[in-house]
Amino acid sequence: MTTVLMNFLVEHKLIVIEPFHEDGSLKDDLELRSSDLTDLGNEFFKVVFPKWSAYIDRGGDIQKTTMD
Image 1 (cartoon, helix red, strand yellow):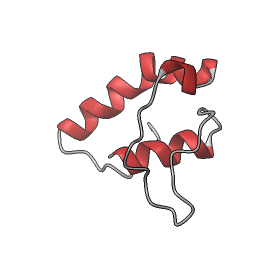
Image 2 (image 1 turned 90 degrees about the vertical axis):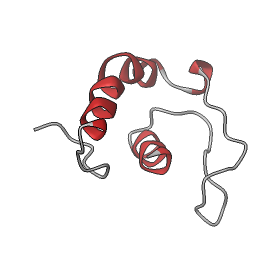
Image 3 (image 1 turned 30 degrees about the horizontal axis):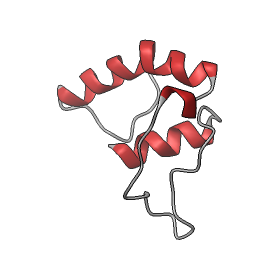
């Protein structure tokens, strides 16, 4: 879930830090703070992330990052 989320944040330029090593693996010591996100990224965590997380908790596809 974290890798999918970080990919989404990077692809949509919602994060100002690099969460991945050069080989593409997620950094082991990654700690995400609100200051690491853009204003839109912080809004994403307030509004969209809870919906996506609830969708996954209900058995939804973790790879689905769009809401149709």
